Image 1 (cartoon, rainbow, N blue to C red):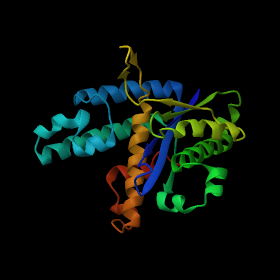
Image 2: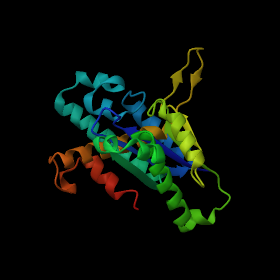
Image 3: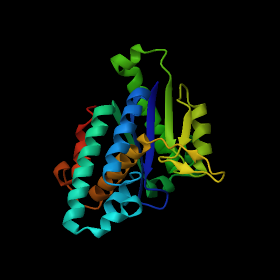
Length: 240
């Protein structure tokens, strides 16, 4: 099975909303998950979320005991290893960024026709790019009977998850969306709901793209060389 993992960077309250993610097979995602979790465990990190990694919060809070130099070294080595894991397992990347103020300025009729929220529009666009890639890539085009799944981070769209399901149902040839958490979570009944770990990589991609676009439009970066190192690597791999 070919499986797409999508997460969001930003929300309706930020200047930009980005949905981004990767495509890989179920088998390669299983291998990815084992290696990703093992690498995080080396640094005693339960799960990866980019905003936490950059601010030493959440599962990264024990890094606060380190000096700034040590934190930066830890972060650099972790990012390098996680990037290698991504590049060894994913086949393609996709993204779509919406400028929220421009989206909000469109008339209600247009929003009703295309998407009721910036999240839904960005998610549908990513799914469309993924279908286009699958249909035109020589290998995946030959796999006519292969099943395809699209997994989105649960909670990113809030009430928009229902709208996204409805919109994708209306789109010809759409890939039905599933919504899962990015990490193992204990439910109210005490049972553990397994997270879909590839969403943690999608979170990283969406965060880096959203930040790069914001910095570009505010004049903080002017070329690729001004971008953060992870973003430069995401631009070059996996190759289009």
